[in-house]
Image (cartoon, rainbow, N blue to C red; front, side, top):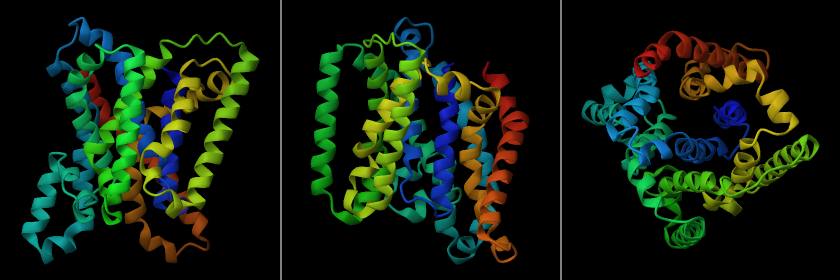
Length: 333
């Protein structure tokens, strides 16, 4: 386990939380989850796949048992929030429920579909598609050396940028932010980053590594902050390639776990525990926010409402991870 990257998942999940309470405008967390998934899966499974130590069925089953049980649970929990739609148009409601049940909602270019029920599940839906394709991608990219893979990534970036210049603005959000047809490039980029780290010799001492970690986080904050203040200017690039540079630096630097932030902060028991429940927190937090909306009028200040939603989300994520999801983890093992 790469402790620092595992812990960072919770940090980026918090950034998604801030988007959903209206305090941020750019959801960098989704890009981080997809890029990191490509990176970690390549790190864990590439050699095992190429050597035949694990087959497609075993791999895909492991990944489904990781995310599908909680998806079903949160989908069911979201039903009461959608009952108005059920009574207005039962057939449409059943259609959206079916699409969500089988992680198919992101194939429909309509925000009333891909954000239906538990809205954040679109990210998990895309990841399931990428997990399905991962075996094929591993064998495909195993034939490329780093130079050719780098050229491929540059062509992908060019293709995305050209597409962004051609696609009408009204389709930006779906095509570049939601659609698995373009989000797969984030996943491939993560696979590329792992290949890149295997060619980098990182022998910096503790002080230099610590300085690099701090500089990377400062750069990320500045880059991300600029995006939040210039959302319209950067659309649709901030849905994709704009975030690749800071995320790649964060993943590469913290992969080596040589500095003070990696060793003293992100490797602490508390951060590792929070990293472990990051997926649970991500899948639960928006439902907590939606169910808690009646409390806004009752609290003396909106900040108390935000704190309440955050604390409840963390507690429910802890309960879910340890007493629900772990049942399936044990089965997976």
